Each structure stands twice: as structure tokens, then as C-alpha cells.
Image (spheres, rainbow, N blue to C red):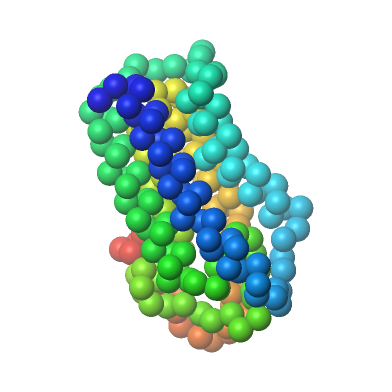
Length: 194
């Protein structure tokens, strides 16, 4: 494993994430939005996450910036980074498949929105967040730069900390006791951590 191969793998995974999401973005546009909580806070959090998981690491891969934050490349860490990278892609695909037309990039409930509790949602309430955390870990292991490597954990971690409570309140408002019962039998992000 070389730094170049690790960066190529990273960019291929970024392309994979985009290819997975694109058809779902097109599908959900056809569904009317019933409840929309996309406010300034939500847009700021999405921007922070995008910066950490996308803009900073992609800038690093193509420009080497910020060079001052370089760390030694450890091939074993890069090889290890392939595992969460591939699993995050699979989980990201699976969450979109399980959600179907119920998916949204933001805090929204659509007309005819259904509570999905099967597939990967049988084990955790937020498997897409699990996929993003796995991606952030892969990013750190693949990119030998303290800023670019850690920006995903910081960027997505910020979104998660300030958004997950709002999202769960939205789901409670939409689905009431059905969602509360679902919360009681599932973990948020890790199947074994309630």
C-alpha cells in the first residue's frame, strides 16, 4: 500500500457515495414534503459535515493542503482503512435501499412517510449515521494528514451531536408511540450500545 493507492481508494469511495445517493435524490423530489425543519442550524450543520467529510479531504488528496499537518504514512493503517471504507459504502447503500422514498438529506417528513424498522433499521435507528462514522474512521486511516484525516470525525461528529436529538423529536412528533417503542428496542448508532 502506498499513499497514492490510499488516496485513489478514498476518491473511489467518494465517487461510490455520490453514485449511491444520486438516484435517491432524484426519486424523493417527487414526494411532497409534509414537515420541513431545514433551518439555518440544519444548513450550517450540513455544511460543517460536508466540509469535514468532503471538501477538506478532497482538497488534501488533490493539492496536498494542508502540508503542515502531514503525518507519517503507515501502510498497515491504510490497509485497515479499507475495511470501514467498504463497510460504510455497503451500509450507506443499504440504508438508502431500506428507506426508499422515505429518505431525506435533511430533517423532513414526506407525504405518506412510513416508519422503517426493518432491514438494517432493525438493529439501529440511525444506520446512515453509522455509515458516516465508519467513513470518517476510514478517512483518518487512509489519509496521512492530521487535518484532512480528522476533519471527517470532527465535521460529521458536530452534525451528529447537534442533529440527532432534533431528528428523533421530529420522528416522535410524526409517529408518536410507534417511534417511542422503536427507540426502546433499538440503539442509536451501534447495535450493542443502547
